[in-house]
Image (cartoon, rainbow over all chains, first blue to last red; front, side):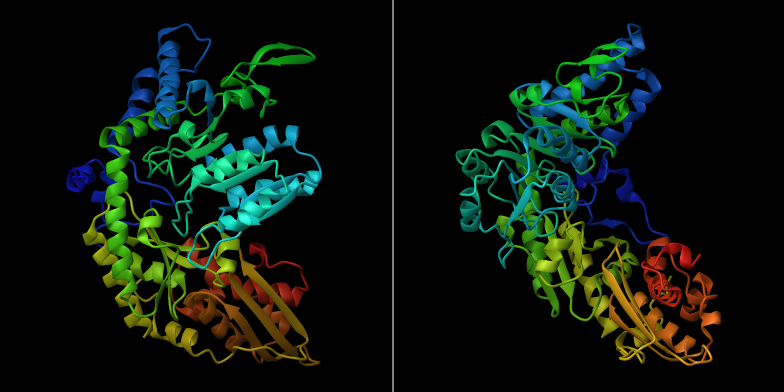
Length: 408
Length: 131
């Protein structure tokens, strides 16, 4: 059964609003952050109206309730990505912090000068800069799986990189610019055969695809709530418990300890060992509600809907003279269409589209090296989610023709 | 908003009068807008009396950033450097004749930041130069 997008749109109050000049919002920027359904907004509201208290150790009614909501959300998230236990889900602020947690805790305990970390040329800055920092601090070495002209990872070169016995392979499951869905299971299997640990940046994949961390055999898997109908300010790091157990704590403070003396401490058990200080409780509740929302609809159906919209969008965009699309064909990518329009800077494209209420992003999308690779400073990017329609794609296409007229 | 893409801006973007490089030059400086990767280089020739005799810009970016660079070059030729140092955000908005939101303001002000950083001999085109 296909998605009833009309009904789904009714869940998202923001899609009803208009811009200053009376245009309906056409939201094609879900890759940056998704919109939030009323179910998520209300779950967070209800938490603040009825149950707000600090979690753990409180024995009063509200503290009990807040704790069980916070931990209940963790259970839902664990189930959503098929982690074997909720102890393997660490709450963080976002994907960036999840990756940094691995870089600060696991990598600083396990990597020394000369150790190789393999990344890819299509990484978001969040999966580059933490490793640049470690390179400067520790003298680790970085190398990169190249991106081919059609936006895929060059797996042959990857295999030769593995001959150099990297300690860590860290890659994005789905590119936020090209939309490429990388063959994660294969990349992980090959890395494990070479003895490497694997971290996956799942910021774009968890919102759009069915992700099963056990089937993938990922060691670490990072993602954010705000790209999957949840609130900003919360994300998660999945880690195999054997790895997380052996890692030193990340941030120090309350809640991450079992016992504190004036001159020492003992770290708490998983997952609390990595969660210092009062966390984003309402946001965790919202994260859980987002997972409920997506699960009720079904990730398979969401992915199918996006595939249909993306195919349609790529076909229509391709027809426009002067449009250059980046990334692979629709069957190898998620709902992302990055493009340039000859003679017009992407910022101008985005600005003129905005007059008709069409929200696309322009810039390097935090993937500057990838843009350099393709010899362009920036692209415009339209991205699609469960609430987008083919009508909206048509509006985008008409808008691009208007831009061409203006700059013609 | 509707005159953000006034004809004059599109015209200066498509057919700039002051695009290019000066060699030799008395002042040359280049910097990027880290938000969008826009890049602008500005070369100046300055007379003994401290008056700008020639000014050219080069680089890439959106219509707003490139048009404002072109208009800025036009406006400083024949002016003493002391006056160039006094230019600020309002001078650029006056040249463009439009109002801008915070994001696009960065595009419009890049050329002035680069110009002033060059004139003052600074290593970086910072926001404080155009406040």
